[in-house]
Length: 141
Image 1 (tube, one colour):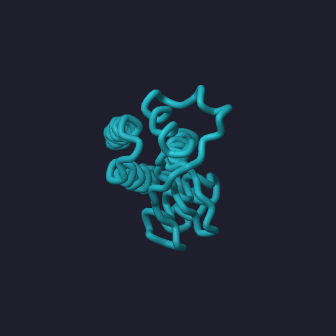
Image 2 (cartoon, rainbow, N blue to C red):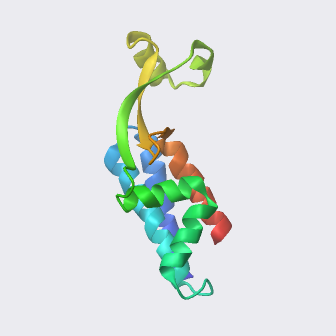
């Protein structure tokens, strides 16, 4: 369990770093890999069956964001990370940071975001997906 706690502390610190640099692809990918590795460590901690592949499949099915992160790490099913402009409706401006607000003013009400493209071509905010996947780890632990 100490190994899980150490890994989780590292994961949480890197997630904080990714949130502080929301367009840093490398930081987001590091967090994704740490999430994926944490799933393996949960299995290794014991009491979760004897087939790691079945455990990983069940874990991925239990939580869509966690499954998306695991698919990204496995480089499977056309799942990928992209940086794209995202339109921001005027009514959502109150939720933007000052930096994003200024960028949106000069970029036709859009800002750059890291997006996870799933195997269906749907785009999901990467930082929100990472946060949801981490929350799912808390339910499995």
